[in-house]
Image (cartoon, rainbow, N blue to C red; front, side, top):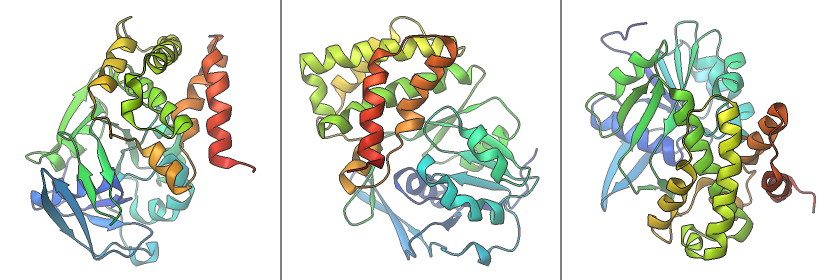
Length: 298
């Protein structure tokens, strides 16, 4: 696949991650067509106290799209894939590359049936971005994305070349994707306490989080991830270094009463553990609690 001289780029889901990528593209003169639920006139990303304004409007009706796009960034959560299906049908064609800026390790399986034969390219997002009360986004780290060394990667690399969002292409994408999943799984504990990253300073939470990360590591290895024994401690150390007020998207969704990405971040550990015969006693407790927090009843 090659990128044309004037590629068409669309982005579905102008939340925290989507706004960050849209702003990076806009700064480089490659402003994407933005698609979402709310008809915003613009997107605003705050970086080091300075705003980057991405002009809109945010399109809200897939019927306004009359031709497929070369590259589509999908930044909706896994709980929103069904709602995004009309956008995927309108934007994607057989030659499209669909870059999934989503949590989990099942992006390709989730999106492939919806993209009209286009190439789904999973990605790992390595930067913290938070939605603010006024719908703007605050970026709290250097944006970086990792892609597998698969067909379509060169199209994403070319689109983001020279932007503030760096792109790595990894031959062992499986290992990196599972490492990020371990981090996300442990971050899910914030939902059960209603607290931010500062809670990991507690010795009891550190002990629990480390045991959970080790359980997740066993499942990741069964899935082919080449993670070493130090990975769980490195992940917990990362939480210890984080600003105490740093949250996570699943905690923000819990505070807002939205459905939670409990399955792609935590349930997947339990599901794959059962497939491989790996015991998951912590997951067996955590997952039902997250599912009930998300879906009820009650």
